[in-house]
Length: 64
Image (cartoon, rainbow, N blue to C red; front, side, top):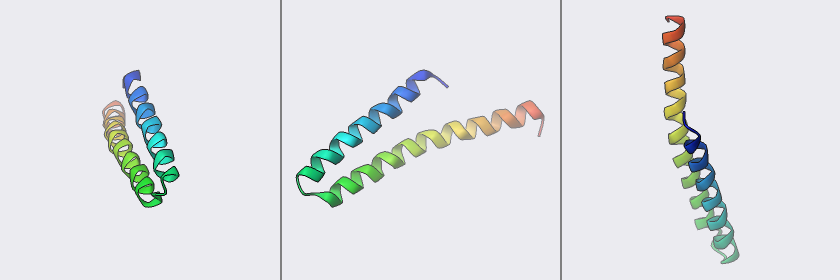
């Protein structure tokens, strides 16, 4: 895993936070919530791939 992944996740978090604040101030709470959920799903898909790689590496190391 590269450190750039951490920066990408942080960038998505900052972008989602800014969009959430802008949409909340504009009175569009529903769109703000959907933006937050979309950002969360994007990050979860990234993290799931790395967790899958981790489990594969653990299986290889312990010969399971």
